[in-house]
Picture 1 (cartoon, rainbow, N blue to C red):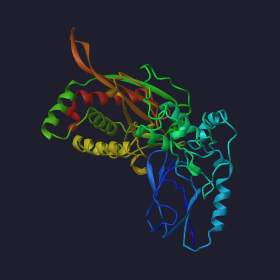
Picture 2 (picture 1 turned 90 degrees about the vertical axis):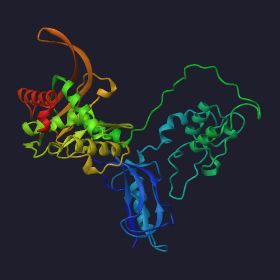
Picture 3 (picture 1 turned 180 degrees about the horizontal axis):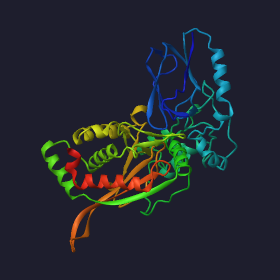
Picture 4 (picture 1 turned 180 degrees about the vertical axis):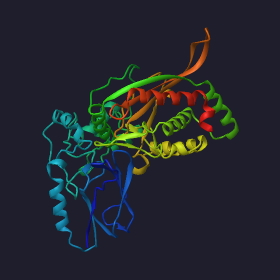
Length: 437
């Protein structure tokens, strides 16, 4: 019996997914648990697996398209099985308003295409599934001087920027249309430069490149960030507490430990996570979350560590940080951060934090405020460590100082409560042996 391949909900907050790549083609035989496609969710790139075996009878959504969770993207069945009913169901769903509003990469260039020079667009070449590849969907053809060249607006703009003659680029798209991949190959090969055949192409005088305004499609991660921040900063009553920490002893301890455990290297952020975890264990009222009709105080310090990734931010969670030593914190954090940057985390590895740490010190930032990630009640923003003159016992001395700012949800945390937590955190970092006892 034929089965539907649907856009699965691969993360708790996922509402739609962008199909990055099909791992199988129509006519391929598949087995249960075979990877069918790679999908971009709001947090990570994940695989869709086959639930049943059979033959990949139909691919309904091309790579690059974004569809809502639950949408039919393909059909698996027996080689001679009638799948017309499933195809009709999928076509009806994908032609609805939600699907019609989804823009592909070429669709983002529609305004440019509408004003492009040349005659009216010719009818599109449809693929078997009724949709064109993401680079070419809804893209009319452009006609540069010297005769008609079938080329998408995306590819034409790339060719113009690279100084290539579209008429000299071999097209691999439907009907011989030039697509962006063809332009990229031409750029790499140095072929199709403008000018007489065989004549050298003059090199433009050096100068600042002219930038053109353009719209950039939102990634699934950027959409999720935008939605979550609106849900946080507006409804959640933030207030902020800042303290400056003398990091001299903590950095000395770090240097001594790294000399003993080489090649493992404990970072400043590992010290901060450890200190925060110990402070949370002493102040359970901070290790809490708002639950609408109650406040939940958590049994362990599950600390989210903000990691900058391409086009966004993700917060992998270090579970039970209050029960782990520095070496283990370093090893687990390094693994989580590496997989976060590769977008290979599982949903359970980036959800469910009870407190978060965001460190921008490595970018030279002295101090900032971070936005709380609901339902957490607080987040710690960490600045850089820098040498500063300070007064001690009436004398000016140079010390290594770092500023941290805690954003608090006033529904859960009062000012004095947050201040006591920061006092403990400060004491831990300024006397780091306390967090090793």
